Amino acid sequence: MNQRRPDLSDNSRHTAVVGLQWGDEGKGKIVDLLTARHDVIVRYNGGANAGHTVVVGDQRYALHLIPAGILSPGKLCIIANGVVVDPQVLFEEIDSLRSRGIEVGDNLRISDRAHVVMPYHKEHDAALEEVLLHKCGGKNLSIGTTKRGIGPAYADKVHRSTAIRIGDLLNEDRLHRKLSVICTIRTAELAALGVTAPPLDPDELTRVYADYGRRIRPSVIDTVYLLHDCLGDGRRILFEGANACLLDIDHGTYPYVTSSNCSTLGIPAGTGVPGRHLRRVLGTMKAYTSRVGEGPFPTELLNELGDRIRQRGHEYGTTTNRPRRCGWVDLVAVRYSAMICGATGLACMLLDVLSGFEELKLCTGYRMPDGSVTERFVPDAEGLSEVRAVYETMPGWPDELDDPSERKTLPAEARRYLDRIEDFVGVPIEIVSVGPERTQTLEAVS
Ligand code: GDP
Ligand code: IMO
Ligand code: MG
Image (cartoon, rainbow, N blue to C red):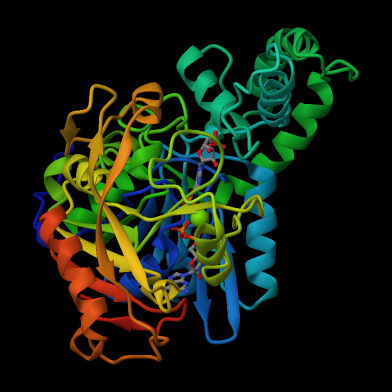
């Protein structure tokens, strides 16, 4: 019998990077930094709704599907089974990286069990959002999705019979059989959503997606065994979370969430690696809060302070270019996410954006409709929309953070701000980021 080798790896050397707010916390920058100390970088959830930015010198990369580790030569990057892959975006991303001199070949592996985002998923996503925005009796019931087909693709995964997996792209006959049924169903559904387009053509879709299959074939593998082989060989794994804990389908502000488990709880299911390997979880948070799309946001600043944060932080979506909603840091939310994700350390990002504010507010409680105050998060959209943030106020620091070298060289007010975050969340801040570049990072990165 084929025995698995014993697992000799040092668990504490594997790391997960996860967002503790509503996304765009700077995960791309942190993954890029931590890549140097890991061998394998794995995406476990989400799809091209993610936009992870890495700045290297004068180059800026925005990654949607490929792990940010791809920018470092000699690292193995894996798109694991929990991801929904849009081959069109994937190949655009590969071509764009190659055109900029980044190697993408044997260093990228894709699970045969990852699900495929098809064109009709994107059409469905956009059409449903349109109906929910404009055709619900004057009420906006839309989620504000990225329209990348994420929800419909995960819905098909759960439906089972209408799903296409990467492995299906490698078998043209099977793909055609499936698409013949799916196209009939989807054409009717799209028509019901008001889409006036010719019926979906299974022959044409099979031709295009079998072509993608031929191109993708050399990268496709059973990534569960690949990851366990890596563990057995003592290779260090870095799990790159996409989206963020408050967008988690089970633990976020439902229904204003994405369709995957984007907290670290998604790692075991999304990769086949058991949770016991996850001893180190770096929770990434902005020094304030941002959110894209609809949904409650207790600390949102719908005034010139919010505009100032948006301007200073260049808060426009990496994937959709939408202006991000901005507000004060919500420590109730961050502490909840740190608890769900098992954060062992924090990376506090974009601290430089807060320079020049006379005073800063930190939300440390929620006033409930009955007047009581709680320090517990309300992971439900309707409930959260009814709370009022309770703030502590701290003095800001007037000057720009011109590349301080260590945390202790930051202005005293900035240090006190970080201390309060650490104290309230109960997790140490391991990394402080004061600019998008690799060098604009304080604290040891290990
Ligand atoms: P991700 O989705 O979590 O990877 O984050 P995004 O890439 O969508 O958004 C974070 C943005 O902030 C990117 O444009 C980064 O280049 C930028 N960024 C990261 N860290 C810092 C920082 O410390 N200061 C500033 N000013 N920008 C940062
Ligand atoms: P990264 O990895 C910010 C939000 C969308 C929308 C909701 C559902 O860059 O942090 P979806 O298209 O997933 O069905 O949209 O989730 N959203 C994100 N917001 N950053 C992300 O990813 C996001 N991924 C999804 O704006 O509100
Ligand atoms: Mg992003």
